[in-house]
Image: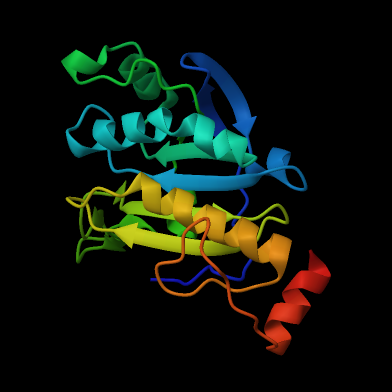
Length: 210
């Protein structure tokens, strides 16, 4: 598993569905550079069981991310048409109707591969036929990207394990606190708690760049 923390978030352009039903071409995170933080999260499949609970949970907290000047973007290896169909289905029928943040269609699987969250790999068998080691879908990866396009946090869960959206908010708060105050955040830090002074050169270098 690649560690992307401290590196530029891999760039991409892909089809996406925004605002609960509008198709867009060449969706890119570059639109947020210099303007917003981004929480980019990957999920395995549309029309499944754990995935809609996560997508609805992000929607329920969306205003809190937006208050922190952070965009939320979801991505899976499904097509944009699949995303659109799922968005039309009510929650009580397993759908994600009401979700308004972008859903990126990684149909080529290159985005998941570049973020190193793709479950499985291609290979050629003895008959020179292309095979895969597993179903090529995304793990539950989450990446917090700062306004300079640098990954500051990543978390990757296996397929059965849903994520905690409050922890994503807490980590975003910690990044904002650090950038604002120049203090690092100890274990279990939360808004309202004290930070810690750190004279490490890496901290000073980060602040100088931001």
